[in-house]
Amino acid sequence: SRVCPGCGRWRDGCSGKANDRVFSLKIPNHKLAFENNTIHNTEDAKYGATIEFIGIDEFYLINCKFINNSMYTPSGDEYSGGCGLWICRNEGISYYRELIQINYSNCKWINNSINKLYGGGAIQIGISTLANIELTFSKCEFIENKALRGNGGALSIQTIQPLTISECIFSNNGVNSPNGFGGAIYINPNFDGRNTQNYMSNCDIINCTFEGNYAPTSNGHAICMEGGVDTLLSIFSNN
Image 1 (tube, rainbow, N blue to C red):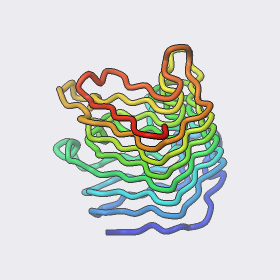
Image 2: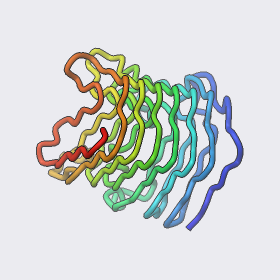
Image 3: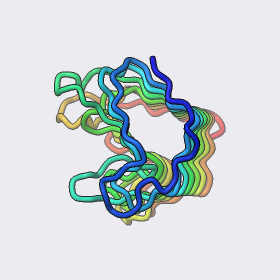
Image 4: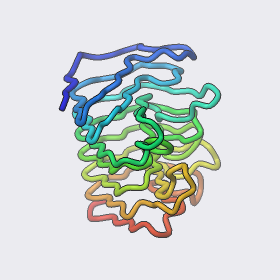
């Protein structure tokens, strides 16, 4: 396993519409913990940061903050979400479907925005090489994030493994596009980019708080799950 502890605050890491990034990591390891880091004030960037997995089984993002970041879309680059953290795999086509566990705990996304097709005002996860992941968010906060285009004012998730969101706060996140879905959370549970019959078996949203999130009329001010006819969505107390 490997730990990337806090290195202070990265700020103004890539401004202007360029391919620059605050950092880019290539991790040839089985476990990675990324702890106590802050990325803020990255403006109009393609990506704020990238983490490229090679043989990773588990990834932990702990006590990190993403504040006042904005991401735009050059042609063909529609991923990452507003915080600009693009997580990808580089293991050859035969590894794309291997299971990875990704865990976010005690993290904060505040006032980030995205102008990309797949949305995710705070963060977008899934599609292509990261569809086959088991994803957990625990005790995280999503405040005033916006998807200017696409779905998911805070979270935009397109994966095929179980998803758990527990004890998180979603406050004043929103979707600006008239065709956007999910003011706080958008989930596509059967998108793996290969036109197969794989789908997310279950999504559990437990003891979360939703307040002041918004989306166009009837498009899910708090949560939208699109196309999950075979997915069990469970929403437990205090949501």
